Image 1: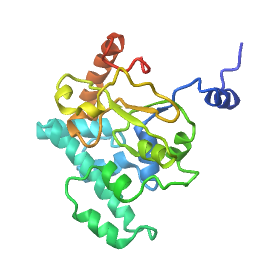
Image 2: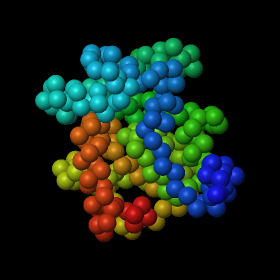
Image 3: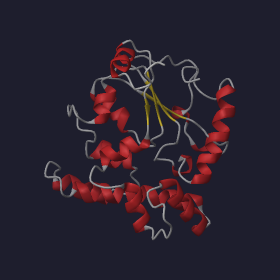
Length: 239
């Protein structure tokens, strides 16, 4: 019987030959952004989540969505929590200018991608051990991700690439929410210099687009199976 263990040599060869597509989880991004804490557990504490599975973001979000009777409020509170935690960590980072940090705090309406990425320079260009910088250096034409944040695009731009961001409209109402520049362009041909970053679970700039609660995940699964077969619903390069 063949050995079923992971062959890192084989994976490295597939990467070098551009014969694979990176699928990047939101957990990887959160672990890179908040290396010293478990985001789900900390959010559960701040939200006074009373149940046992406090390490499950989807369940915490579902609890708040039901408690508030408002899915949108649960999502905006989650995004606000992420920003607050990042700013708290940034205050302890001596490499960040205090004046810049004060200015960022006064800016209202910034998404986490804008706050941490555009204003505070995450991920740091040239930091070779950063997971996002490593992924960007793979020179892949397509990246699939479940993160709603735009840090991979920043890492790609730091390497001189011109990434295109597209977002999957996992429910019909998102067709009115997601702006045209993030919708599928059937004429776009991804390449190593102009890669496609395809966000399956929304963007943090548009809270309605997030796949966050347990119910969201179930709806997403039902719709993505259907849309994967539909021509025009998703980029051909992804299908």
